[in-house]
Amino acid sequence: MKVHLIRHAQAVTRTALLPDEYRALTCLGRKKFRQVAASLKKTGISPDLIISSSKIRAVQTADILAECLQFNSDIIISTALSGEHGVEAIEKIASTYHDADELVIVGHEPALGRIVSQLFSLPPHCQLSKGSTVSMEIFPGKSGLTAELCGVVTGSGKYIGKPGAALDWLKEKLCTDNKGER
Image (cartoon, rainbow, N blue to C red; front, side, top):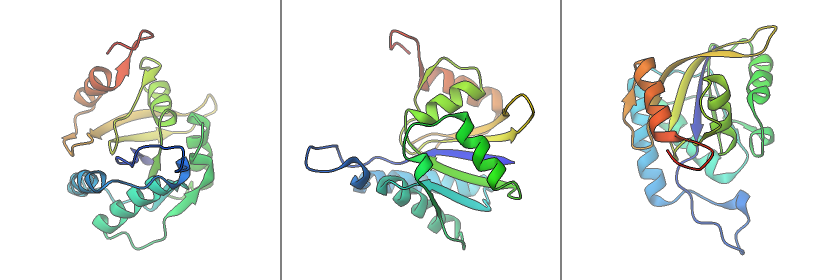
């Protein structure tokens, strides 16, 4: 099964008056994610399902992607993607939607970074940039989920389609050591 993990695009800043779940995308966030969605479309992405966190910024990101891809099904909203989760959430989604060949999961940090770190043996402090996408082929097995990296689309819309180059980019741009240094 091919899976595309997408971090929501740039959202309005948190405030004491605005609950986290109601933070919407900024105009710049929508504009930049349209570039990401256009890059994803050029790669030939054709998801059977788009699954999004229930938080507004993730739903809006999923909606922009669906519009760009001319996706004709409903976006599936999952409250399980709104909080802390890890590889087990991806395993559960893959198990639930096992008939799908390709799916998109739109979520948040730090959960998505943790998943990417675990699946690709990266340092534990990976953080996907806003609007970025990590594409992979996943393989559920008796000893857990394994994955092969297919490519990355950066938060600015640049596509890195060679797995080795994508992994190098993840290590260089998104991962920090325990001291917070890149």
